[in-house]
Image 1 (cartoon, rainbow, N blue to C red):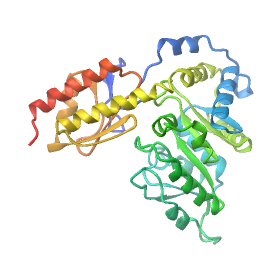
Image 2 (cartoon, rainbow, N blue to C red; image 1 turned 180 degrees about the vertical axis):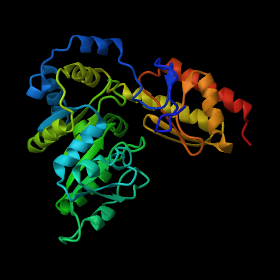
Image 3 (cartoon, helix red, strand yellow; image 1 turned 45 degrees about the horizontal axis):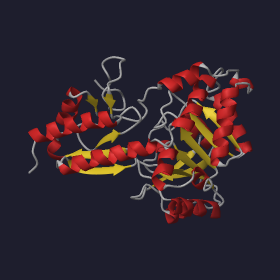
Image 4 (spheres, one colour; image 1 turned 90 degrees about the vertical axis):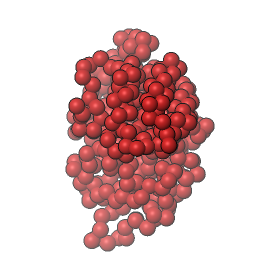
Length: 355
């Protein structure tokens, strides 16, 4: 049984011990639950929730921006950003396959009347500055007004280098466009690049970052940027039904995650590298690893058999019957967990030895 994403749906509400489908499946740990229980609360629509205010101030300061907005999800973070940047009939230039265009139900077009211009994503997950420049529309009433460039880091786990992002931002600004960064896994990018958080955020006008991917919170994202734009985004958040009341319960989880769960992302990257190395050693198929993600295209069409075997070992793996399988390492898979995963892999490919 699958959900609409094609991923296998769990038969009951009890999460399996080892779930590789995404880093969104993590459960709040004891410390985070305690922080949520003890959170100081108010009405955030009135601007009176101290935990939300503290989270927004903390993220804005860490990323060197004027202001921030706490939203319910990464999709809402990107959507409110695009609505704040672009008017109806204006255009965002974005990578084909980037989350904002491929996995967010075309919300910016459906709800905001924003035109989407997609260009190919380069091998490193970035865009070509020349392609960006070539797609900026002239002042012609037959065409939409190019207003924004949308970047992404990480993309499919790949941490895009600072100089590559800077070149894209320069191309955008030379044409008078603003730049938004979908930084859902921004801290994974920072960890892989060995840079400061503001080294990434300084390159762009707005950044959305997710607290429930990698950092382990139950829900929530934060959009950062200039004060006037964040105020417009706040109005759109309300319009979209995203005005929450005592949301400090969630914001306190975000504050806890920023303090305790950022530096440990390096552990996920190391475990992903180990997983990829073992898959290559056993000749499992084509393997690619980037930050906390491993992509496997199993040889001999073994996708379904591999997933079924791993399920029998207590490991949930997503993906379809053909193509690549994504496996994501996260805070709920420790050293003992990765050993169990590797044992299942070795057992399976021992029964299907390579050629």
